[in-house]
Image (cartoon, rainbow, N blue to C red; front, side, top):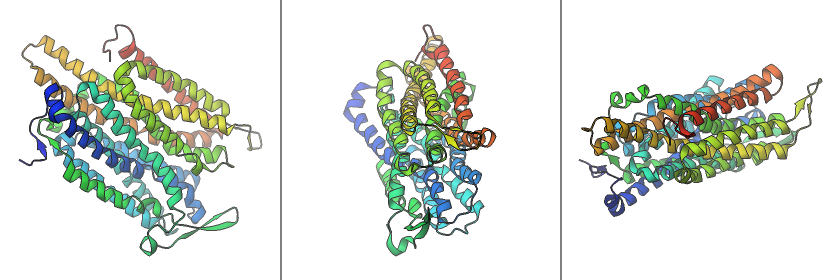
Length: 466
């Protein structure tokens, strides 16, 4: 058996954890984080590329641009469904290395496609769908890291992996506009395009939006292959994991995670175009990256907060404050007059309210993921109380396998928010001339999430306190 396969892994054993488990788990975590960081960067890169396409000669409609923004989320969410179950089948080390290396396909493809304004739109759609490979990586990454840490530190570990991984969105939205302004790879990277805006022509290397990630993807895939571990006890077939589809709380947590992570990734995907459409005088490249940055940072700390206060309690307050924040966003948005001209609006107020939303989604992402391992450990402990033949070791193995599968599957369902939110903006604008109608729909959804959290998890005598 390969030395990369851990034959004995029991993080709940304090002696084992202190002697060797802690250092091994952290090594795997700190290799996983940059891999996930790059996955998020590639997944959301179209959110910045589409803003520049019309300025370099691509003759696409607004609806076509919104589709390019939304398609990576659609494919990423769908791939997550399958990725959710692959770590116990292939092993965390192998799958992390392979899935990270797969990001080279869209990164290189975008680099070549954007250099020619005559690139067929279906080709651009295919590349947008391939960016979903980055989105799929999240569910397998979280599933893998869940196996390495004890219950008391799962909130921290999952929060760090997801939070610092989510920074890839913000870093991409900050880095891409910078690298577009320079011949980063010289003649190897291709000729510049001419960006024409307000009658002024400037050179731009739009291909760097894809090429800049290539060396880092290659290095991270190599680090994962040689530096991470597979866990022998984490092996499970698809049929063994498919039991989660019979668990009521799997579906409830899918709903709640759609409200937290779905909001984060959807807001991140649509933020640049929303700013550009509602505040035409504001350059979205200067501000859009700050939203995902705030959300990623708060997710990193949100896991620790949930470890101390309880995941359900934190999630309840997150949804309540998200409702208030959306009302604030609506209050600061401009409205269209009878002549179709935007009137009023306050960008500073709008931007601050949206930063609050991003911060809350980050905390909620961590708190919901803290809830899942606790829910399934409690479920199997209750089964063991009824059936005394079930050992403690069996409880831990089964709860970890189910929690890992649920973490991956809920992340798949939640990722559909990255598709629905930008498309909701587009649909609302097409029907009413403003995205405000979509925001009211979000409020109704968050109120429902608030009620579900309270009823099942956070109220006194809740059926599954966590």
